[in-house]
Image (cartoon, rainbow, N blue to C red):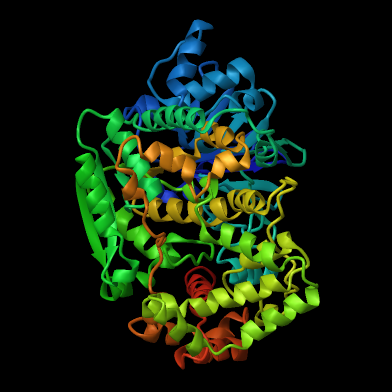
Length: 638
């Protein structure tokens, strides 16, 4: 895992592009503390920079930027190609000779053998890289199929700038920080800025599964080499549930086995939930010594799953380590979040994710995770909940449904929380009922089921008036899959948007902040393609994640998978009214809000006061605003 960056002057030569690229790369030292390098060709106007986290081939033969054996291609690369050993054997049979043992060298040989576009389709892994073809003076920027690894780019002053994080682009002397107000409004809505937009106007995220190609004197073009929309629209395979479970087990074993290849110590995140427990069980099945596992727990019992993780670790015989999180340990961290995320990001599970990454890095350099299981196997409660709701009310006139939604909005927050408490929800989770109520009310007034699903994706606030000058036009593109059932469409949409822009962004930035590599075997594209090739009833089964549970049951008692889903959330509403109140008050002070000029001061203050008085729970919306403010103080007005 590494940090990459570079500059390509489209109009011709540049005096010292290597020095520029190296200065940009040094802003990514946290992503690569083990080495730094740069290469440039002044006549071609190209400079590539690299910061190295050494994982495979720790010697100088693995250092980057790296040249192909014939000198035609130069690469700066972040990630892992897990099937590089198989590719190497194939390339050696074709006469290719290697001097080291890295996957980077295999990639370069593959470009020489098949060309960049064809070679990429053979790679199984997570990656973002730039490769320059010195023969044609063409730059290719490539991102992995699912979007595990990030890649930002822009054209600035006649040059293409790119990097693993925005901070690398900001380090270029001609970069202009022009905030996109539509991106701000979208961020307040979703807790992230949807791809391909970024917080800055004219700066883009390269979409997953795409190659950007630009030649000297030309214009960039982006083409997909893998389309999720095509994968999810496959016709269903004809096989039994047992055959599907057997095939999935074999694919997951292959994915895990390949992700255990490393020249440094590795372990796994273990929450005790189905996804991470399955991954750890498969790891242990592939290993002849105890796997190292790490978990984060919460003092608030309703949010804590550490006992489940402990039980799974004990059953599998792992070497288990855990850390308990409470409000006291959270308070010192909130001021650092904007250092980890140089683009506004507000999934509050970023706090425990950072802490478990920090703890894990003290023992290992690589950690496997269970990320992607909910999207792939249908684990989020909202899927069946919305589908069931729409089956009951979808045939009613829209006006009547909207009236029901309006009545739901008028119900007092305290009454909702009290009612939820009566059925056994703790105080913190009962308070979140108010936020979910607003999402359900919006869904009830939707024109159709897909519009209802889009309404449930809005986790923050859709009050566009909070961002003066914004029209609220920036929203994630709906996946053009035309799948026959609502749950499948929701899953596909989450895989295309929420997964790469929220979940994978969170894990990448939090793990890379402490120089830890995270690997996600459930998101191996071969696993994704197989699961989506199954008919929906077989893919999901009679209960959420039934197919994955059938694999889990091969290694652990099935009863251990039957636990209520809690997620990786924190008691945000309580913390904002308690230990985080002073920090929040400072960021939301009217004079601070006025300095930014990004938000409507009166609207923000009203949201804050209604939350403090418990008249309306706005924890997520406020967290989004607070993360925007913290980002602004760190990156706009330092």
